[in-house]
Image (cartoon, rainbow, N blue to C red; front, side, top):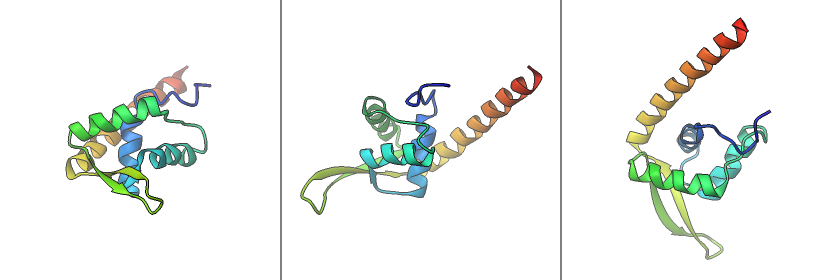
Length: 109
């Protein structure tokens, strides 16, 4: 079984999908959403997630805003952009093609 923290190239897809369903999340909330929505199978570590968020923001797929929470802490909230929604469609299509190909190989083996 693969390590629970190895998302193997699917981190962008997972982050974009989560933000399409739950806008304005901070990084820790995204990490916990990945873990809980995957049934505790997948885990995004800070060292992978935050560089990915920065890269996706630079690509224009997400936007970020600093806010002050009710407890007085500053948090950076992320949300999907229109370009991010288009990228999500592309990423989902690619994912379906890859999983379909893998399933074909597994059925033949």
